[in-house]
Image (cartoon, rainbow, N blue to C red; front, side, top):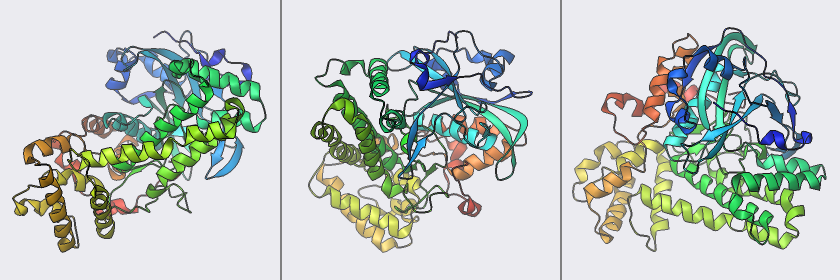
Length: 486
C-alpha cells in the first residue's frame, strides 16, 4: 500500500511529526471489507501480522509521515482555544480507486498514543468506543450518509484508565481529509492570516478544485461547505441520528460525519432527546442539531472573513444554509412517506405526524419502516404499526389524513412500499446492540461485532434471519448512557 502525506507538505506550524506509540501483543478485532475496497486493499491480508502491526501503530509503513494536526474550536458554544489531534495520528494518504471520485483517502490511527495536543489525556482509545465508532461509521455509509470510514480496529490487552480500567484499542479511520471547521478557527483567532490562507488554498486544491476559478474562491468554499453541512443535518434528522458533540472541532470541511463519540439513533421519539449524558443543557439534542449546524457554519464564516473580504459577502454565502436544509429535509420526508409529489398542506401532515410520535414516544425506526406496509383499502393491516401507539384513535385519525393524501396522487401500495423500504432502514445501530457486541468483545469474542457489521451493511434489506435485531429494545437498554468518554 503506497503512502504519501499531502498534509505533511504544509508548513510545520500545522502539525507535529511524531511516531505512534507501540502497544504490546496487538490483535485484530474487526475489519471492513467494503472500506478496504475503497483503497483497493486485499482483504486476505487482514490476518497478516504486518497489517495488524501497521494499524496498531507498531510499524510505520513505507512513505508514511506520521503527524498530529493542530486545530482549535468552540466546545458547547464556548471558545476552547487550541485543541488538536490529542489521540489521533495521521499516517498519510493512499490512492482510493474505489471512491465515487477517485482520489486519495487519508488513514488516521485513533488511540495511537500521546501527542503534543493530548492535554491531560493519555492519547489512547478504549475497545468500547473503538467498536462503536467502527460500526457506526460503516452503518452510516450503508445508509448513504456522508461519513468517515473505518478500516479496522486493533486491540491490545494493555489497560487504560477511564472511569474504570479498560482494554485499549486503535481504530483506523479514513476520509479524503480530516480538516475541520476548527482548523480554520485556529488561525483566525491567532491572527495569522497567512496560515489561514495557506490552509484554505490547500483545502480548495485538494477537496474542491472546481472552486479555484470562482470569482471569490473563499466565498465559494464557505458556501459549498455550508450547503453540504445543511444537507448532512437533514440526513441525520431523517434517519434519527444524533451526533452528541457537534463542537466546531468535530465538523468536517467536507460535510462528513466524523468523530463518533456519544452518538445515538432515536428510539422512543422525543425531539428534545439528548444522547450525550455529558450534555447537561441539551445543546446537542435532536431538535437542536439543524440550528447548531448553522451556528457552526457561522463560526466557520467568521474564521474565513479575512479571506472573503467583507461581511456582506460572507453573510450571503451563509444564507444558503436554511433553504438548503429545508429543501433537503422536505424531500427526504416525502420519500420516507412514499409521496411522489409535493402539495400544499404536506407540512401540516408532517407536523401532525411528528406531534403524534412525540406524544406516544413511538420508536422512530420501526414507525417509518412499518408505515411502508400501510394499505390504502385495508385498515386491518395497520395493526403492527398501530401497536406502536398508546393513543390509537389519534393514530387512526392521522392515518385517515395520510390515506387521503396518498389517494391524491393515486398511490399504489406495492410500488410505494418498495420505495419506502429503500428509504426507511429496518436496521440501525441501536445502543444496546453495540453494547452486546462490546461486552462479548471484552471477553475476546468478536463474533457479534462481525455479525453486526454484516447486518448494518444492508440496513434496508429484510434479512429474516436477523429479525430480532429490528425489534424494540429490551427494558435494560433504557439504562444505557453514553458520554464524551464514549
